[in-house]
Image 1 (cartoon, one colour):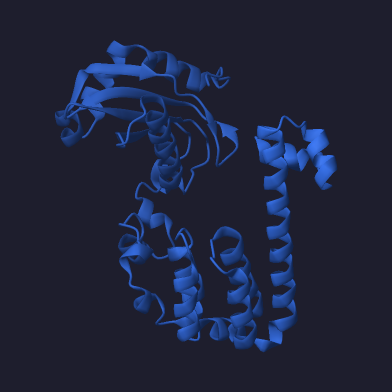
Image 2 (tube, one colour; image 1 turned 120 degrees about the vertical axis):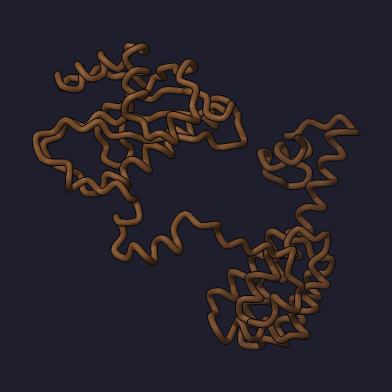
Length: 296
């Protein structure tokens, strides 16, 4: 969005750099050689740029120019800074603004590649700029460690690249990993058999009963099991402490099965026999809205 800047210093700087010819002259003089050599200033176009700082929750004054670099759409970002106080986390602010520009580019051009964004700070404050930190890594408590860990390729754990045996080395974590890996299988029975053989259900229960319950409900709710009652009966023998709860779940599943069968019969009357939703629901003692949703 474009908001009027009330600071007279910002107004003057913006008015000056709005002049594309003056902006080109500015960049020819002040950009580093390696940046100036790779961009085509003849393609420089001013973008709508003034926006709200999502981090600081305040309006900021900046200029964004689109320009070709190595034949690709890129940007030069200039933050107009007239504050009397020096922001010691300036490098972090610039990083946040740069990401916003990249996000806007991706949305606007439906691009699958990030654009290059070269940032500059045009500082005209009354205090010396020595307090500005230009290197993002020096904004961390441990810069050397940050250089090793920050902005590095992220760790990827692709469950499909691990065998079940590898995922079962830690039997507690296997309760998470195996369920996530196989939850979309047409039938979880084989995975459950393996988890029984490896003692995973027992191990998970002994480690954390709440985690065990989450794992169990996730498998039965999001997954498909050919014989859920048989699975629960086997589970009750593996974790006898939970037998009462497991049998309650089994009963609930049986009731759900009966209910779904009833819905299917009612739907047949509606679709093939011309019954109204209301009449079929009354006949089978079903909730009208649930039957309506089931029929759509």
